[in-house]
Length: 260
Image (cartoon, rainbow, N blue to C red; front, top):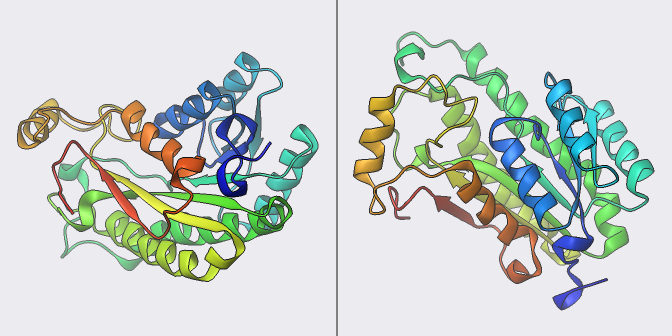
């Protein structure tokens, strides 16, 4: 059943969350399930975690392995979603992250990092998102609308740690967010980004020293570090009919650390 302006309410949507089995992805998956959506849990190396989600939500979640960097695997992912739920995907959340540990002390500095690190992050972040969006377009056309939510970072505005490769890839994803929003808007498709800072706590941020969490908390107006659940709330907004007139935007969700 359509909501405002033909946008499908969350409870009637099929949603794809890439990298949706653990860390922030798991929080995103669980947020959509809580709102009544059916969720395709894409995973690459977290089969057990993805299957556990599917088993807890029979008929409403399905675990599918696909490397988003590979277009053939992404096409097969969408085909599996259609077979499982009998409906096209209405929202895609590009969350998948090529292996990365959020530990500033362990990351290569500017005089050490090789371009292969940038290339790996661009492949996972940009190539992966482009593959997913392009594969979703047929289903979006069938529905007459579509929602794309890309997961970004506040590090473009506040580069306090030397995550050079990760930040560059996410900055490129913001550019893709805006150019795709302009190109796809006439088709009823919105493309937005939600950018967090350090999240307390995900698998990726588990290596972060406690002192860093405390420092960031003390620097925010809310005196706290954003949780994955709080971040997920903002993603729900962009997937919902309430955001039907919003596209090409980057919403920073970090407790006010960055005000952009």
